[in-house]
Image (tube, rainbow, N blue to C red; front, side, top):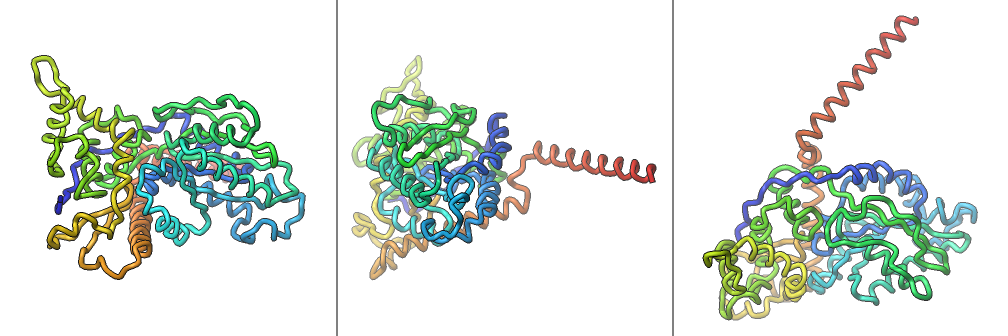
Length: 430
């Protein structure tokens, strides 16, 4: 068992913000004026990192303009006039859908729901995997029931938003297949690479009774992922889930971070041990690990030299397709299982859920505790820390690149010059 899991050295994050992302960000406020429900997709493995803080301001303004905070819990109790219900009326729901739920341990779902309800009471939380029809059907029913709560509305419009490659187009194809009777052709093209959807889709009907329409939108990355260790970690996380172009990174840096996270999720039997000979102990050594993987899979260059780069690419691909399912079977954080045969450690253990939640476990506290409540408390601490770090980064300007800072200064100078010219012209006319 690993009792010490050092954090790896990570490269500075690249900037990847194509023009179509910028265009959609500018279109968003106008689109929200025609939207009743926002489906925000995130990745279950990165429930906090896959939040796009650039969209938050527009979403808050949308809810404020709709007066969402004044509406009762049930839209059926609303006293709003029928003409104002529905499109442009009191329906103003934000549903955060966490995709790929089968890639995180199931024991964390309920504590996470409670933690999110405590910290973000205005957001509904829904876990799903698009390869599970039951999940799609449940989400479709949630949307239909939301539409039925406003019986005077002629239709309900849904906007799907989120970072690149979180599954927005795949979700809409699945919802359309469930909600429309008869054979339904695939309406949206999908891709495993980020940035495939570049424009807003046409309206798609995803339910006939009641009428529910939806728009697919381009995935929007943060213009700058941040400075220092936080920005570096944010970039590597997104690269691992293919939310940012993997080619922008040295693949061995991704492997170093992936080893770290898999060790945190299960320091006794991390998922990657499936790839190594029996009785191989967990490791933090990236070079040794890739050599073992390369040898086991026969990945050789000409001359018999091990191809560790090929092994690294294979390992990342394995984790996305198979290893994530294995790591999702990690035991609950305070139910130590096989570790009970080990002597108590002088160094507290590090454990976590997904790649965004990490906390310290003291074995001496593993008795007489409600597991869900303890995990919820740990998750709430992680959410608080994330919010605090985000606010601190914004205060220090760590979310703005040097190029963005120069552009902002130039725009401010131009605005001041324009103001001075206008003042001089007014003075002359006077």
